[in-house]
Image 1 (cartoon, rainbow over the protein chains, first blue to last red):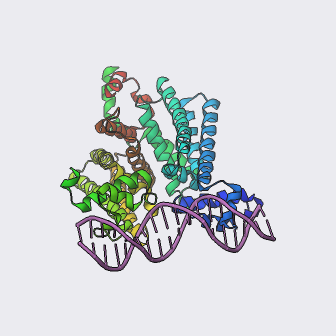
Image 2 (image 1 turned 60 degrees about the horizontal axis):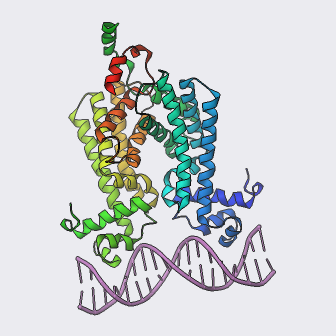
Length: 207
Length: 207
DNA sequence: GTCTATATCGGGATAGAC
DNA sequence: GTCTATCCCGATATAGAC
């Protein structure tokens, strides 16, 4: 999408995304955002009431995007492992596609003023709850190991989110390769199964 | 440690840690830091050359702490799994003990000016390299599954680091409980292995 | 819808007394 | 080593013309 094929409102938001991600919300001057969008700082106020509104719109849009996609995945499959794999892929795809946007979501919660913070946090809570339902269901159906659902969801979300901080589209690995690696790490862990194999003796004894 | 049992220099740094973590580096006024430390803003300049120096000292101190402790662990054990477990425990213990400090390290890299950024990033690179050596060694010795060392280290570090954002000392789980959970997640993953599925009794023991 | 001009404020940093 | 007073700048936001 070329700059002039978007509305000025979208241009401004895109510039804000770029600068908030690069310098942080407080360190990104409205003048610089305006410059990238090709207008004067004062003109921003025709499209947005204030700087904070830019931040809220970025966060809201992308947290909703995340929630909608995860809801779809949960509804479109019944198999716990398939759901998990789709959830991982979806999380990583969105976080690499909207790298800057999710980096802002991840690092600028503190910059949200008043009610905005509670609102965005509620969207994040919704996402975590969906993921926790997915994990709990898989445990109850004997597909996942029994473990603390909250902790497992935090760990999984954290590692997948962080991909956005190091992933480069021109880099050594494609998004799909990264997804496969994370699926395996999350499902099977680091340990070579042989290393757990000594336990098979115990199994044989039990059986 | 009571405030008046520390030097003013330490008081100022502690106040900076508190406010940088709560509001972010740019949003934390030097005047507020001074107020918590019990002096006037101008007096800070007797102890530190500028605001940036506070940030650099916080980050440097704690990245060095992390590196020194991981180096010790790597040297004090030869067993890959034991090394991994110690590294996980060390990372989580430091990140929960110095919660605010590591939260700052994790979110304010962008606020570092000039050479400071490269310097702190080099300390972080050292830590990642140590962790990657640990993982690579474990793979070569057939204890860990063969997988991308960099990706595995990023994933592991990210999930352990993020504990600092949700952990509460008065919360439901103790640090040592969290460490056990993360060790298991990292080593074995979420999936209940079919091979060890019959071990219902043993799984119940682990919880 | 965008501009120029400007109000207003808060922040980091400095000067110099004590 | 800490204070008061102040400089100076950059930032958000507003007013009003075009």
